Length: 122
Image (cartoon, rainbow, N blue to C red):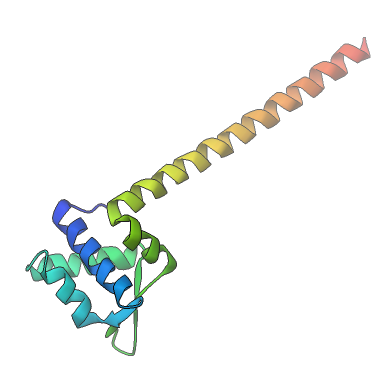
């Protein structure tokens, strides 16, 4: 997802607090970490939704009263949300290029095999 500057700062502060607390804390304490950066409740709701959508956190308990970090959330907390998402997009782009390169390599190998077969058939 796309974060603006205020959302990214609030997400970084909240994830850092969550990591410092041992990767789980009550939702109110999690939101209190965001209040240090931005005191707008709309931003807190947006950041909670963005972090959950990106797979950095998930809610535990019957009513979702506790927040826990995922494995990706731990990485994002240590690197920073924007840096982690940029790195993730770069890896996805590299994997796409790798897939295209493997297809091109297979086509070239088949053409070489076909040319070799035509050359030996004469």
